[in-house]
Amino acid sequence: MNPTIVRALLYGGFVVLALVAPMIASDFLTQLAFLWVMIVFALTWDILGGQMGYNSFGNIVFFGVGMYACAVIQRDAGLSYYPGLFVGMGVGAALAVAVAALLGSGILGLRGHYFAIGTLGLGIAAGELAGAWSYIGAGSGMVPPLYPGRVGGRETFFYYLCFAVAVAAFPVLRWLYAGRFGLAINAIRDDEDKAEAMGIATTRYKTAAWCISAFFLGLIGAAVGNLIGFIDPRDVAFAGPTFGVWMVLMAILGGKGTLWGPVIGAVIFHVTQELFWTYLLGWQRVALGFLIVLIVVFFPLGIFGWARERWPERFGHRVEEPPAPPQAETGK
Amino acid sequence: MDSIQLLFDAPVLSVQLLIDGLLIGAIFALAAYGMALVWGVMNLINIAQGEFVMLGGYTAFFLYSAGVHPLFGIPLAALLLFFFGWALYKTVVFRVVDKDLFISILATFGLSILLQQLANQLFEADVRTAESGLSSWFLFDGLVTVSQIKLVAFGAALVVGATLMLYLKRSRMGQAIRATAQNARAARIMGIDTDRVYAATFGLNAAICGAAGALVAMTWIVHPYLGLPYTVRAFMIVIVAGLGNVAAVLVAGLGLGVAENYAGFILGAEYQAAFVFGLLVVILVWRRFWLGRQRRYLR
Image (cartoon, rainbow over all chains, first blue to last red; front, side, top):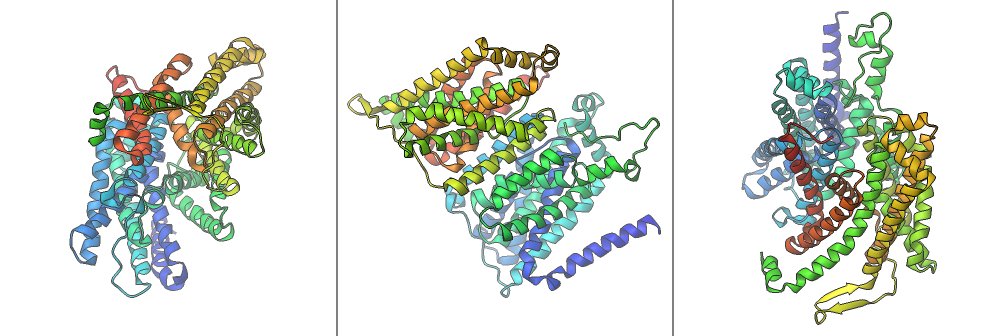
């Protein structure tokens, strides 16, 4: 069969399955909504971590900024529910992009492990600030307005909202990676000095990449704040040790630097995580720490990275004679 | 900004802040020294550094509960943590030591979460402390309090640091560690078992942190989530002081202690943690702009 048709059928089937999922598995709606959230997490982390080689622990900042901005708009703007929510999402995303652009010039000049640890500090500092700032509720957090529809309608509505964000993010990233932008950020990953010498405006590309990731994280953050119904500064909005690490882990598990890798990684991770939650009550965080060490130490290539190493020709890498090692994705 | 005004009106408050800052700074310097050691020798940034401090604190606390005086708890915590660090190297860390830095950061971050959550499950989330039974001195008509235990902790931190320096300088293993730091490959050719050196280095680092943790348990409090701020402080001190400069590590540690105390006083205690993590970002960005003027960047 024609590969384009196969792909179209695959995508179509996927979307249809996702659309009817709320009717089939209505008991797990919140978990299913979080599946889309996780996919957005992994995809947006991979823009920097996988494609550009900048391993960030601080992307959670944008998530939290979006969440808080939306909640503040819903609280103070005096709009009714749906306009308030959508304006809030827009403001949240815009503010997250602004924060990314503002921080970008300073933070993105750091390289390698300095960037990783600097962003780790950034994420926790944001959480601590939010936890001390009384305008946004300080340590006791914020509560978004109640959903006006019928009981149980809230989960369905936010399921579709999270689904919409994820479904919008995927083709946008696919399109970006296919063009000049993708080439530029891959060049930055492979050798930033050379990329700069070749005339790529590296700072501009790096900031742009961070802004794109911030945009989707701001959107999903605004939705998640309303889905959960309670915004805690350290455990929900700027949850570095949970969401912040999970995004890294999901992208690595699936294979960073690929388009489908983060999606697959997010699905596998989310299911595993939910099982932990159900069967290891109280010990789930311990198990998660164990899982992180296990994945990072024994499976750093990820599923797609491993498959690419195994069957390089399927991924469009020509194997030359004598067999050269396939183009390894080195995350410097 | 009432609190700034207060500082000018009553300069004696500054004395209190300075003394407290200097005394706590020595403990920060100790953890930072361990991090610099591991970073310099093994080329690995250990995010689980603060968790070693936390475990050292719990060791001291449990020994204290069993009736051991906290001061004897310091060497015991160091010894126990040495074996813990050694075991951790032999099971996990040796697998990531020659991988790229991000993998080792993520792996030790995983270890840090694992240890923190284990401590939370096993020791419970309560705040603990090991009472030393020492009293305090009151200076300036009781406006300035100097608790003797903090002074003892300061002295003990200096002693531990000095012992370690002497060990690295004089002992056979210390020389092997320094040789490996200079050039691991050459050291291997010269017949040094670098794997053993790495294990010893990681163990030593854990032991230093264990001693620091025992001091923390004596002077302040221990709880399962105390680790990450110590890791971040250690990292900050190392990037300001550089690897392998002990005097600079001590000075930076003391400076950080004082800065943190002042920030806690001026901004209010609820912003103190935000200050520590924010300062990390500020220092990194400042270092980068400073280097960027010479077309260089942090390596």
